[in-house]
Length: 300
Image (cartoon, rainbow, N blue to C red):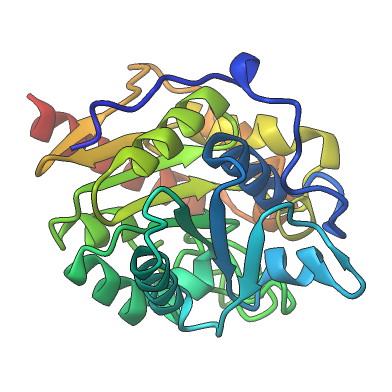
């Protein structure tokens, strides 16, 4: 569906910034995800963002961090607002303008899932980017539906009885793909060229598209600010975050290194996982291996 997109890379990006001067935490992975996506989409873009990290740091009177038309949506209504923007632009003959939403994991997989499902069902020509920092970071690091097993958050504290988050992360990518969406992908700020090209593909898709990008959060993850990109890359290299696409009704793996980097070191370097013991680490590793057995079997 999106085979006519133009390949892009970090080296080919314009120096013009369309998201700058924000008030985000140092090393904010979500800010990196938004900044890179807008460099691909360009000035003729209209964005909607719910009440989350990126609206909190991007819309602070009298300063606005966006160099494009952008507005804040309700927390559950990002996708429905995108649909309205798309309809208004098309009515004015502005079909060449990109319409993109940037929403966090809670605002997408939990609160905003109904509106997202509706936009995909209607096949509205919008791009929905979920920047996933794996908790409700803007409101105090509470568990979301995309918080991984074992994560220490303010609502899933690590103690003797409960070793952090007791549930697995929702498989949001496959939930979205189950709608028969024209284009969907997972990405990571740790692999920027892969992410940039997926944004370009989404923009070239003649219908609804969705990108689920892993965006590290030093504040919530308990990691040094300078390792924001590195830790997001490690999530891919340890097999915890597969890079995938769904296009023309078929799934595709974009990266399968075959041999994983050490999982234990990656997790225990993050404050949110430092409490994990051998039993929890073994569970996470077994769960990863089972997921990859399924992914590789589907590809064979």
